[in-house]
Amino acid sequence: MRLRSKFAVKCAKATSSLIKKLNRGSGVTLPGYVARLIDPNILKELSGQVRKKTIVTMGTNGKTTTNAILCKALEHEGQKVIINRTGANMLNGIISAFVLATDKHGNLDADYACIEVDEIASVGVLPKLEPDCALLTNISRDQLDRFGEVDITYNKLMTAVTSVPKTTLIINCDDILSYSLAQESKNAFVTYGISEQIFDDVSRSEIRESIFCRKCGKKLEYEFFHYGQLGMYHCPNCGWNRPNPEYTAEHVIRKEELYSFDMDGIHFDPEIRTPYNIYNTLAAYAALRTLGAGYAGFKAMIEAFDYGNNRESIFNINGTRVQLHLAKNPIGFQQKVSHVLRDPNPKDIIIQINDTYQDGEDVSWLWDVDFQYLAESNARKIITAGTRKYDMALRLKYEDVPCESTDNLRASVMECVKQGTKNLYVIVNYSGLYQTNHMLTELESKGGTDE
Image (cartoon, rainbow, N blue to C red; front, top):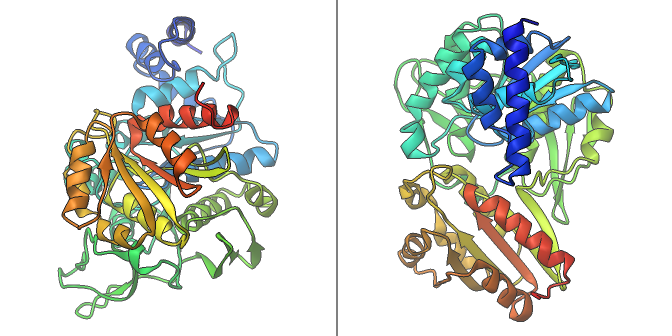
């Protein structure tokens, strides 16, 4: 390693230690910034030390869970893996993941790297990593003030993948945008998809980013939608259509909240409560088979895997079952609404919406979610919270869904625990996730007492 790179690593590690000592955060982003200031080529230097393969995971929804599955599968086989586990998926966070994994000499001991990459950041990250595989979960609308319309994201991803022509793409062919990108990029690609209808009417909704042929511009015909623009499609004009995926999940069954399915001739009974996690599992498996590692013990690993990933956590607070869910964009929120509706029991619902830079300061995307279904959710009470609690309340009012607003999330949780249905759903966007998770963990440990 070059002397400059070693100095960059030492300074970055010192920065991380100082941040933690001062209790100013987790120290997983600023160290990367410091390292990059000292050595602009630090990421290329460190990623070159990975002995076997590097895989990146991108996409609007599902990349954190998919990346975690990849890492766990490889570790299950005894491989040493670098991962940006906290989801710090911009350039500085990714550099930090590599820097903080080095030994005292600034060297890495890693067989694989599993790196989650923000779609907008991908243009600057992929040429430095030169990954062996790039997995793309889906492309849909996200934070409007960061990503703009979906074509901007599509173009950024196209620029990124064409900058690494030797990288094999792992593509969700149910998504016309992802499949079109793979075909146009000229990169080698492998497809995965689900050929049976496993999503309900609430999941499917009417959120469609693109339902026109990418070849001739005519409107596509769908045999069915999964959600968004994902589904079984073909063009009646030029014949462009969804291919038969190389990897698929089939015989999907939901029983007592959990989904089971077959994949590659193997039956799986994982702890999956939401059908989109079948996609995440399938995506990871397709990538591992393409890499040639991590799939031999996949069944045992995935059936013990925790899909919560701090984004879908279940707590028991004084006899109340509390589910915490992250929802950050229209498609993702629609899946959470569907999940709530699949539970026929009486319930309480708290929705916290913030508008920090992390969340996206533009919350107009709330109007793209079909919240009218919550009128049929058998909810005793729906409460809105967060800096945009009144925007959320207004959105519900337009659907004639009664709700109330709170300035004190903790007090509202306690009210639901003490006087509610014993079945509470808490849905938050990014900036509220860590604090809410911490609060619910604390309340669970105290047995529901707030003393």
